[in-house]
Amino acid sequence: MNVLILGSGGREHALSWKIAESPLLDNIYIAPGNAGTQDVGQNVPLDILDFDEIAEFAISEEIDIIVVGPEAPLVAGIYDYFQDREDTNGIKVVGPSLEGAKLEGSKSYGKVFMMENDIPTAAYGEFTSDTLDAGIAHLRANNGPYVLKADGLAAGKGVLIIDNLEEAESELKEMLSGKFGEASSTVVIEEFLDGIEFSVFVLTDGTRYKVLPIAKDYKRIGEGDTGLNTGGMGAVSPVPFVDESMMEKVEERIIKPTISGLQNRKIAYTGFVFIGLIVVDGEPKVIEYNCRMGDPETEVVMPRIKSDFLPVLAALGTDEFDKLPLKHDSRSCATIMLVSGGYPESYEKGKTITGIEKVESSIVFHAGTKQNGDEVMTNGGRVIAVSSFGNNKDEAISTSMRNVELISFDKKNYRKDIGFDL
Ligand code: AMP
Ligand code: GLY
Image 1 (tube, rainbow, N blue to C red):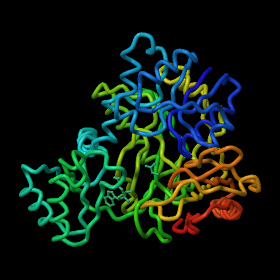
Image 2: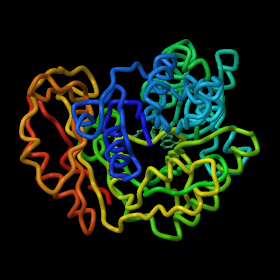
Image 3: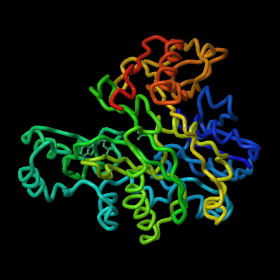
């Protein structure tokens, strides 16, 4: 089989690394990829939002499966594009349709979907500039903290959690008058949930599904979960506080109703559902849906999948899917993300990275890296994820900690407390 992976982060390196293990693989291409993915397959300089260009490549290289890493091509309709063209509708695009991608692309759509299907989530109201007064009244009728969410995608910055009522009112006004452009022309105001978060990943074809290893990521830049939000600074899988009975609740109350909700709405969905959960008083509630895998969660989830993953992807949409195993490795896996100094605010690129070859007993997943002659250079905010196994999370984390110290670049930064709260 020939596979094309779209994206250039640690997630795409981990996906291509896992798929490349398969004896069923002929060729794997990563577009545009990074300095790490070129060791797994062939990087191709495609624009992940140029569907004509991707289709042309996929036809000429006889691609069987396209795995879409980030949300942008999904929210822009890549699944429907490939379905609609007669010469590409035989290619399996792993990712939801435009309609399915709205679970991530619109907070309001996600909330309505959860309400329709009785999926536990925070109580909410949604407001536009026409209903600003009602929005203010909604804030005043509740106690803080106030959770304000831009309806649309806002580069991970669209969720504000504010303690003070006056500040929340003024933020609501700013959001509705275009603080995040079109993305905040509708604002969802949610009940604040106080609990501990983890994430569940489901691979589905809209009917059948398999639950992948669970994970917890660390989104804040600073130790002790302080400072600005990032794409993610590290992750751990499995999550020690999530036991079998919690997973049963998640499966019965959240995963199954999510899949039947897709069917009720006749949503074409062949891909990953990433469910962000929070446990409040022992009960799981959905914080958000994403229509793709998480990054850096994929860097701990893929290593923990023991079965050949390619036939599972190939079987999506057929009865064969249910027959194939998806075994989880019982060991723990942890990843620590090395980032450029300054990230998630402004940072410099083009710093030489050294020491990768000294790493032992860990898997180095490249994120923002670029090959420049013989050198590997930094090329983004998140640079390299170092993933390790252990018999428990402490062992896994300490192996990653030892190895991140061997990798050097100017202004390297990383969190030294991944897993601190587990
Ligand atoms: P989201 O983009 O929806 O994942 O939100 C980003 C982060 O904000 C989440 O990972 C949570 O830590 C936090 N958050 C979102 N919604 C709530 C809520 N209703 N109550 C408490 N924290 C929340
Ligand atoms: N690490 C969180 C995300 O991928 O959205």
